[in-house]
Length: 163
Length: 149
Image (tube, rainbow over all chains, first blue to last red):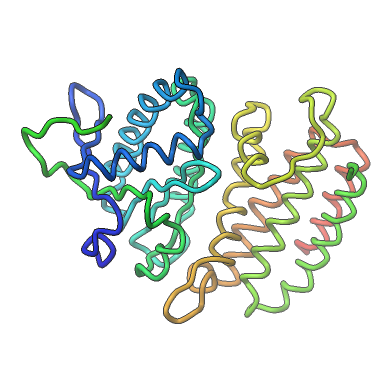
């Protein structure tokens, strides 16, 4: 939890709203900065593409949040970070040992997103890490552009802060 | 520009390296890395052989290669075995833990051999055989069979 405590990453919660997962972040300014970096990394330079991208990004973050939620007993951490080449969904397992099932699920998710027209503007990669300290996962997370899934819904009556 | 045969040559060479490393359980990180780069050459050989159909023959970087493998449905089964190899190699090269064991803490030598080589790399080569020339496919299969003995 050291990284979140230092507020390096942006805590992001997700909840089920009208049957679909949506994300919320208290820090709107930093969240918007992440989206802008994501736009650049995924090459959505045209204004029209950016509008589509932002919607797709919101839906993707929700989809990934749902995926994390479903596997919350097996995951220690989950991040959506921005690299130069696109977005990277990083999960940190609670186990130190190799988990073939988790790898299989992640591959399935990766293919699903890549082949979905709903995410046509998104360039997403995925990476599972074994249980590790912040020393381990910090290397994979952009310090200025990372959302951290913080688990079960904890906010109530808070408006969606996704652009 | 590399050809199918040039990628085959490099893949076969890497499989020989895997045979050498199979006797060195303390180098499971390098075993995982060589297994991944074997897969890269197999996939590049597929792209070259399949170039008329897909419209390209060579990919410059890992991100683009992954994007093609997972977004073109006929390559989906290749990607199912390519991604775990890529993932393990990323952990081997970039994950740093306090005890500096890296991948060897995550996967022991037997798991690297069984899950990465005998399962994912073997399945990737088998699947790639559908796209490669018969000679290329059989050479890869034979070499991998020797490794599995």
